[in-house]
Length: 172
Image 1 (cartoon, rainbow, N blue to C red):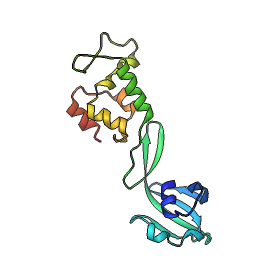
Image 2: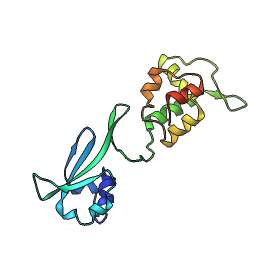
Image 3: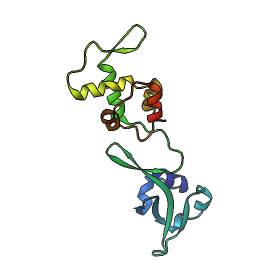
Image 4: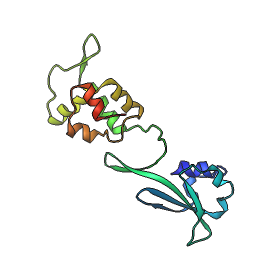
């Protein structure tokens, strides 16, 4: 949300959301109320799917409407603009992936191997993360993985041994 305000009011030199009088979250849009003094030049910087108008209830405010998607990332509900998203790393998933690799040794070809099964059921499910397809693991580390690829889904939903099946279930 703050990147929209920064883009539309680039001359504002404080934290972008400090200038918002009110923010409303709707199912598919975000409404940011700004002082009407910020209107000059704003219309030229709008994306195609964004609108700005004087608020009909309070004419001293602008109503900036931005289309958004509500996404679940683990236990959090995240508001994302509908445009292209910058990479966003899931640190919990990355830490779990690192833990999974730490539980294993590697053979002479660099492939993961285990001398014995982990003791706890949780660790037995966790170690399976090390067997995700390399491109899926890389996407997780770079924050390019699908938003439906969460630690909870991997731990409780199971990971197919076939990399092609993994790619079908967890597209980037």
